[in-house]
Amino acid sequence: MATEIATPYGPARVHLHQADESRAALVLGHGAGGGIAAPDLQLAKDVALEERISVALVEQPYRVAGRRSPAPAGQLDTAWRAVVDRLRAHELAGVALITGGRSLGARVACRTAPETGAVAVMCLAFPVHPPGRPEKSRLAELDAVEVPVLVVQGASDPFGMPPNAPGREVVRVKGDHGLKADRAAVADAIRAWLRTRTG
Image (cartoon, rainbow, N blue to C red; front, side):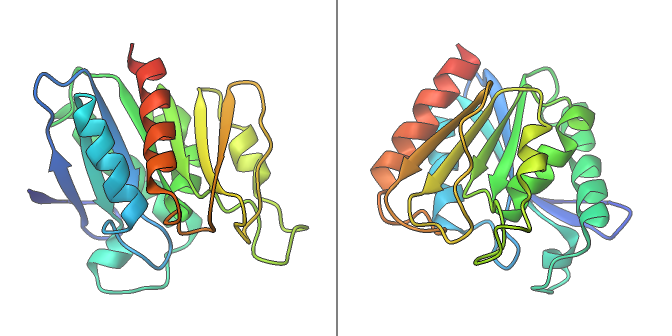
């Protein structure tokens, strides 16, 4: 079911999928121009529910308002924290929280991991740099995360390939930024990592 949650930049919309006897929760954000219907987000939701992990798919206020161009980073992060705070206090209270998302949503989850109390961060197609602009690296956002991180990245992603690092697992799969070429490999990577995070 969809619920609107007030943020300082307008309402966000949360699609909550409660697992039976949930042992953790996964909160995921969407990419810059897309929404929560992205195939990799839906796949992550399905895998998590199979693992008895509740899932909240979050639409940022700019998407709820019908805009495709994302809000500035500070607004995205503030809205995300407001949504996660509400979920932690109510619908997802009392369970370990994993945050993440695809592309832009992954960046938001990385930047806000300390404030949201995330025990881990899942990044689907992390945009290391704009296509053809490796000098505009965003790797510092990944490097700053102090909890375990999973990155599932297409081997031919024009947004780059992050390196493995202590606490960070990078899984290369066939395909590009859309993560559509090998759904089984994406699902396997998510499932294996979630099991290590939730016992």
